[in-house]
Image 1 (cartoon, helix red, strand yellow):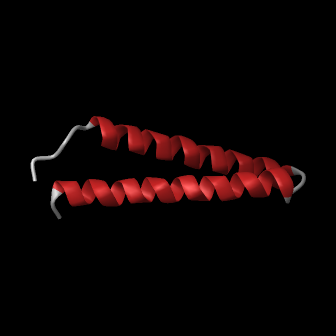
Image 2 (tube, one colour):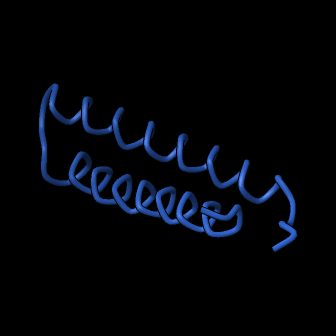
Length: 66
């Protein structure tokens, strides 16, 4: 697969992680209680950090030649 297309799919994956983090943050704040609330919040913020790191790498890796 060519490099620009691969970067596109990787950024789509990062956007999917961001969507999952929003959903799990909503669940942990408004729907869950107890230890499950903390676990889902930890997972949600982990998704957000990973997605931000991926987008950072994709954006700052520069333009592609194709």
